[in-house]
Amino acid sequence: MFRRREPVPFAFVAEAEKFRSNVPPPPRPRASAGQIAGRWLLGATIIAALAGSLVLGMPALELDHSSAPSQQSQATDGR
Image 1: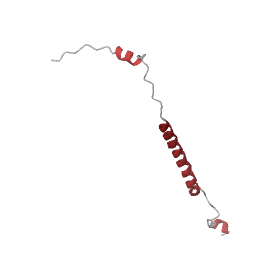
Image 2: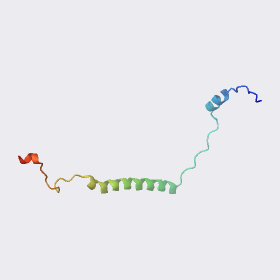
Image 3: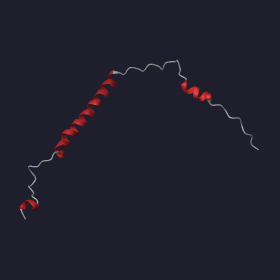
Image 4: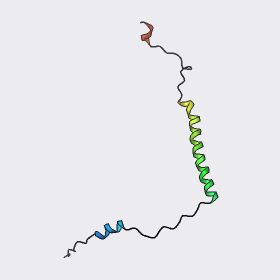
């Protein structure tokens, strides 16, 4: 038959979560001029796309009451 093992204390797992290494991570390499320009260009493109969508979409969102034919209900006809 199978033998029951003794319960294993898992205190070392809790201590391992608290452990922090005193070795610092390696420094990040500096971005090159091309990478900086590419990031700036990507950001400018996204901002221009959002502004363009607002400029092109605003006429569709406006309510123009002057071009709509005037409609009166039957209640205002005095019937």
